[in-house]
Length: 420
Picture (tube, one colour):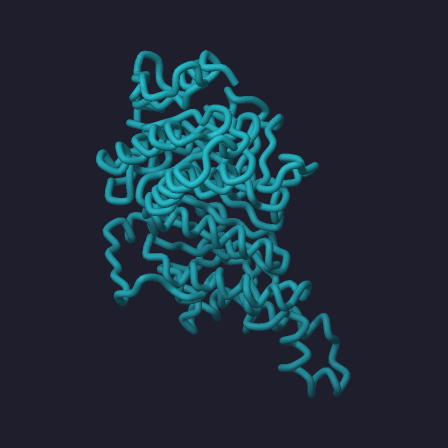
């Protein structure tokens, strides 16, 4: 990658006329340099850098200054990577400088939004640094792996959950990075942005379209764990995160995907709206499920952002406990939903065993169970859900719940972090 390519990428990223290069003379004579800049992306102040070629000590120092500026001003950082690792001409001085970069990337994550855009090679330790960002975007032509040489493709990496978004080219990647910066606050102490919007909700669309404003929506990890969708969007002009399960049992990959998204939203105090349509817990890969579900449960319970849970179809067994339990501030169920502490078949077999043995029809008993003990009204009477609503009013119900939680303040027991 040549310097003019790097400048073109930053010009594409920043709003027109807002590009200001920093430390332009900090480079070795005749060497291609890392370019750092400060400006605006979608109207928000942003510190950015392009990592050019192999890293050396001077390039590390320059990127470190970009992180320092972001820490002092409380602004997001966008890193653009086309880097094939560390320079072989330096040893311990370079390792020390690179360690400083990793330290900054780690300590600023969740403090200011960090977005990595991979456009080309991102190999070795550079891949580790890029992946420490809050959101990682890659173009289709990129190479992104730790141990070269490797035949793994960006598509495979996205399918394994290591990428949040795959873009067709850099222009699209820059647009997505801008959307993410727009949807997140400047830092973890800043208020959420407010958007002007037209109410163009799609009444006949999927549930995410029906809930959101359909102005800006970015789906993260789209190619990973497809039984759950995780989207940053706006609702009533305010940013929010939506986690939507599609009715299957919760598998380990789904749990990991939802967990990482909840942590992203909680770090910047975005409300999380969970559509808890899950038929229990998947029986596949049971040992991994235990780890993944523990992490997901911990993420929900420990998150202090506003949390709303919707059951619009069916939520049963352990899935209801994890997704709709007391980790949520408000849990609502549609008037035709199924809410059950066991699978419907299991509950009928257990509760109506004597009636089944006496010859009563199983399907008739199942309908009885669905209309009584598994009904949303019964769940509301028991306190398992906080309200029942008509599905056509779902957006209004979510808006009312968000208004109720707009002044939420929650403190936790002092600690460094949970162990699991």
